[in-house]
Length: 291
Ligand code: AHG
Ligand code: MN
Ligand code: MN
Ligand code: MN
Image (cartoon, rainbow, N blue to C red; front, side, top):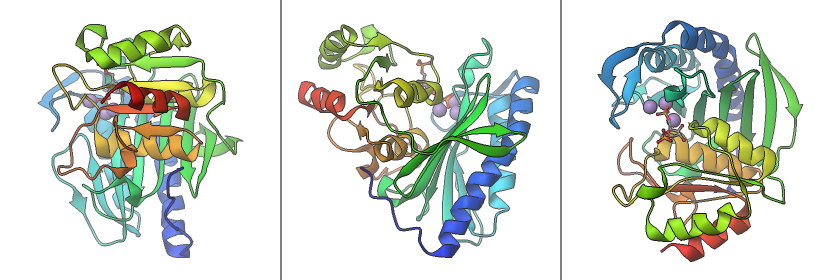
């Protein structure tokens, strides 16, 4: 279970609520941007991803809205090199559009956010709250704060709670592993071989949707260490920490192969990590399998 930092000071709690509501209120514009900005932008982000015009537009929308909140002191994004700062006290890190390679085939995409007490790059235990949005058939939002996880449906940017205590189901049924068999390390391949006989493969290429499968059905999502890239693909600050906070708040576990992802203190803002998230017994077996 993640150590949820005390947001009992009304000021911090109010700012956390305002950030969550502002992100929700921005989603209709992001949904429109996803439809209108389908082209490439001829630029790459700090981790070398090609940036779609929709990546940049979503980033712009969230920066404007989130930095306009009184209690917010900084905005960090996987789409930009530097953190933008202003006066305030809480720090926001966002993956403005997650799974943007799914834009072309119109598959699942979303937004991931973390609300930190310290400016990124910072350790995951400084998270006060975290969440994600899915722009699916329904626009939905999952939010973890104060040790609890809630799911909302968003209509015109307003939140309507549909589950006020999301927990990872005891009996896991799905797995989704990124990277592709021929690039996995031998240990991971042997773990995957074991798991695939017990679970059903559900992998959609967008972390938000694949993590939501694990929250819905129980199981494990991983973008593991690869032979060619021991640090894996996904980013600590913008994908690893927030999703770890959510999974651990929902009774699951996270790991980089050794420890909770929340224990990672990234040196750089855009550091990557292998990541494993899901039911605790599946993560325990994984850690026993791979050194
Ligand atoms: P983003 O679109 O924010 O760059 O994230 C994409 C990530 C993540 O959402 C997903 O789990 C993973 O990339 C998929 O990678 P592959 O395309 O290699 O499967
Ligand atoms: Mn990207
Ligand atoms: Mn992403
Ligand atoms: Mn992204």
